[in-house]
Image (cartoon, rainbow, N blue to C red; front, side, top):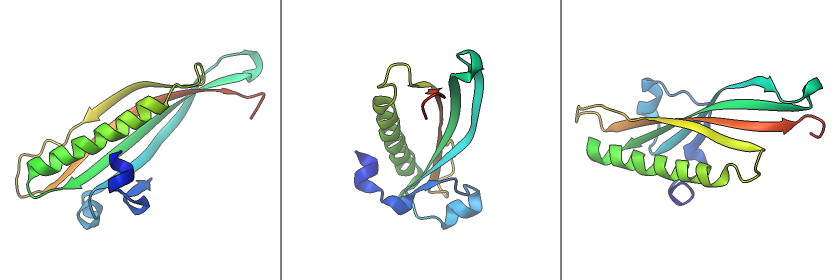
Length: 134
């Protein structure tokens, strides 16, 4: 898997500043994982016995390359590995967890002066939690 073989723990960050100033100072490739929010719109049983929670996860992949095309493709490869890992390990317990939707925003810079590429993968992940047993 790309993430385990090409990225060490210092290159995967949780809740990190992804502003353009920080991106220019950060070594690449790097993966930033941000949990935007947790929502619980439905209580599945009376008295809150089971709770459905929805997580919105933002995954920023920042890459650099010798040219923009190289940085763009490297980012796509990393995003593909991340999605494959999440997709194959989610939903294994039937009604417990589920990956509901995803969207991918590809960096669309056309200027070759910028060799940094930032892709954004947004995942919506649902989980059903039995509140009687925690």
